Structures are given as structure tokens and as C-alpha cells.
Image (tube, rainbow, N blue to C red; front, side):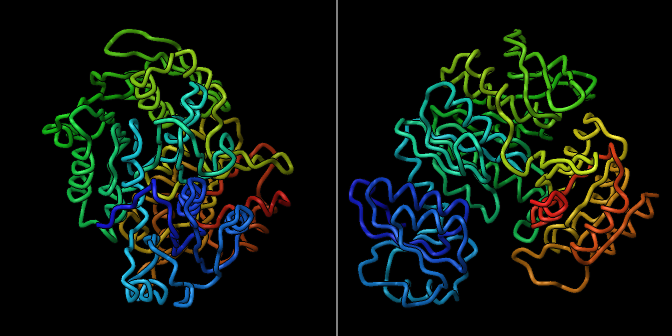
Length: 467
């Protein structure tokens, strides 16, 4: 693999520069002296921002964008081998790195390179840890897979030896990373359009954990089934974490970092007692709701303590942390109906979000769900129905295709039938306008409405609010 010489800036070109992660790394390289250009399919706020920085952006991906002065190509996973611009780069014998390879090389420049992995919760935990490190005056460089108000976007360029990033398992991209500290939040069946099965996914997380050096540290959820299979042959230091309050975890074990005496205030605040190796450390208050967020906070607190950040700074950061966009995000209210938006698109995530919503004051809990990808919907059809059944009333949109073509053997109506068999009140509409009109006519004062999914379902709530 081609090795970038970061101390010798040159012309570097990004194919797919408008992506939320790609744009951040393009901006980073621009800031350290590289001459950066890139292309994307269409104009966006992200590309406008890059242009304002002095980065050249082409709209449309074509061979003519590959100019003779370009020395390195970086491309997103969405770029296929037959992409005309990518083909032109290959024909020009230019070194081509995917986004994960770039991140992996960049991590080698930092003494404390933190990678947050897991099937769910990466963005929230990365955001929590980022806010803690900033409150702890660690001046980190940050790459997060969502918009975090605390850094004014998805990327922050720091000047310290601390680098914090999400590590996604899809296409095994995180196996290109070179962390010194890692977090594994959970391991579930997902992305089965790439992985064979859960065993295949677990093997990838094992390989990811093995990328840590001997003097590295792994923070792993001790509630993961047979987590020792992931950690058993590691040479680095391993810390487990989990919830020991029997009211929220019936299968209590012993963990290095633990939460007990959990309490919710009925709206948006969670609190718990934090323990390290059985010793009480402090009482923690979170400004986000849900047991899943308490779990997400444990490795963030534990890692921060190991990095030398005082518990008082950690507590202050968590009390002000409101979460990234689209993670149980309050959007507004209309006619006494509170509208929340959430990115959940896997049964486990839906269960976590709707369980958290139970603690939020409401009369009727509505969930407007947009299934994400045909393969995921088909693979987890019954699990989707079971998780969505936690809502009082469910409204379903068409499947958001994302990177997939319609195979013709799965439809939202299949999910409707599963929910009806569970005795749920469920409605399906093929377009957002119909969904909005239905909600306007049927939601009542005091109801809680959650728009949910990884596609563009957020538009529904924003339209209702006139945003």
C-alpha cells in the first residue's frame, strides 16, 4: 500500500469529497498544507463549505477531473471499480487509497489514537468522548459520523497527540485502522449484504481488537455474548464495562467499569453511580435519556480516566452533552405534539430508542419508521416488527434503498403484516405527503411522535414543524 508522507504535502484528490467523513479528512489535509481537490455527484452545504476554504470541487465524476498534477487519490467506499473517474486514476497509475486506509495512516501520527467500534452507538459514544476530551483540555482531532454541535460539524482539527474517530465494521474498513485505544460497544447481526453471518462479524471484531499494540487498551462491553472469544488472545490491556443495576440487567456480572442505581427524571436526564473495579467513584448525570446511553457512557468515562482526565471534568462534560444530531433529537412541538427524530435503523437500536421514549412524558407514542435497505429489512423482518411494537401506533414509509437495488421480494407491506399479526395499530403510506396529512389529522395534544430511520424520514417531522 502507498504510504502518504504527511510532512511532504502534495496534490491529493478525493473522489466522493462531499461525504460527511471524506469532507472532514479533505479539510484536515488542506489545513496541513496539502493542495486538495475533489469531486461529488451534486452540490451541498458540505461542498460549499469546502469551496469556501479554498478546496476545488468538481460536480460530476468524470475522467477530466484527473489532472496531471494530482499525486494521490482517496476514494469513498461508494465508488465502484467502473467509476469513470476512478478508472482514469488507475490508468494514470496514481496511488489510490480508500477512506479507511487514509484514516489508518493518519492514526499513526498520534500517540493516543482512539477508535470507537460497535454495531450500534458509535456516533453517540464518539461524541461523548470528544466532549469529555475537549472539556479536559486535551485538544483532540475528531472525526464523528454525525453533526456534533460542540465542534460545529463532524470534524475538528486539534493540535495535540489525541485523535478520536468512529470505526465502522462495514466492508471491514476498521481493519485498516491503527488505534492505541479501542472501544467495542456491541456486536450484532447487521450488514449481512457483506458479512456471511454473526460468526463472520464476530471474527472481524476480533481482528479489529488484535490491531491494538501490546501497550494499548481495549474497552469492551462485558454484556457481549462470550466476549472472551474476542479478547482471549490479546496482548493489550482489556477493560470490561456493563450495567449492574438488577432493575435494568437481569444477567448481572462483574465488570471493571459499571453503572448501578440508575434513575430517570421522566424527560431527558439519566443518572447513575459509577464504579471502577467494585469501588464507587462518583454519581454521574447525563443530559440524554435511555439505558443504552448509560451503557455508551461507561467506556467513554473509563477511557477518559485512563487517559488522565479528572472525574470532575468528565462529569461536567457529560452534564452538558446533548447528543449528536438525529440521536433522540428534539425537533420541536406543534399542537402539543412533541416531535423527536432518531437515526435508529436496526431492531436493537429501535428497541433502545422506544424503550427510552417510555420515560419521556406522553399520552400516545407514535413511531414513523422508514426501513433502511432491502437486505436488512428482509433479514430482520420479524425482529423489526417486535421492536416497533413497543410504540403505541406505527406509521411506515417505503424502504429507503440506499446503496441497493430493489430485489422485488421484500416490501414495507410485509412489515405491516408482521405488525398486524402482533395486534398493533399500523399504517403504511407510499409518500411523505400522505404520512404528514395523516399525522396532522390523528396526532393529539400530549402525544410523542418519533421519526425514525437512517434515510430521509427526518423530512416528515421537519415539514410538520414548518422547518
